[in-house]
Length: 187
Image (tube, rainbow, N blue to C red; front, side, top):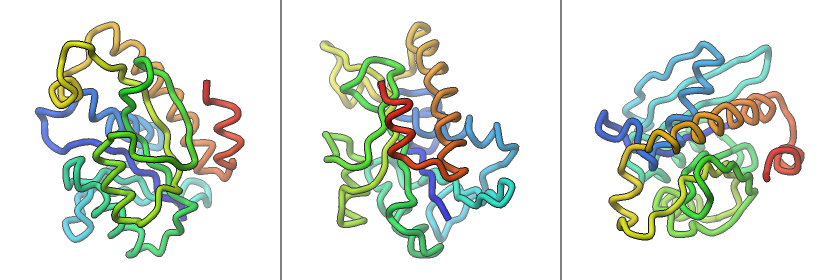
């Protein structure tokens, strides 16, 4: 079984912020599959079990807030006995232009606290990531910038990338190797 995790912060005030692009992407993908998330308090997550023509996977939104995302990911991995090779994390990327999609099969946290928490909880940085560029401000401090809503121009780029991520996730959930997806879609 695969585990697809969108990173973000719970709560209406964070819904359309740059840091929540992982939640936005996984919500969009869930909508294409006609499935809904349910709160699971013991797993500290909004979770959705999907069986799409025999392809079984879990969609996950940690409800721990970004800085503790690893707790929820670890709980779900252990509960469902999911192998690290079957996990993909969707997160925002300050170091890429707005809307750029990059696929990586491992790497450091790069200053991203959600990834840092996952690396600490899993004891490795060898897990797949789909990174969605949100750009970086030269004048607004990072902590403020990532919690702001997208500008109209950014929103257009982000929505385009969300559609691409849904396509990537569909292929991943059906068994296409992440390496092949990275070769095909990382620009």
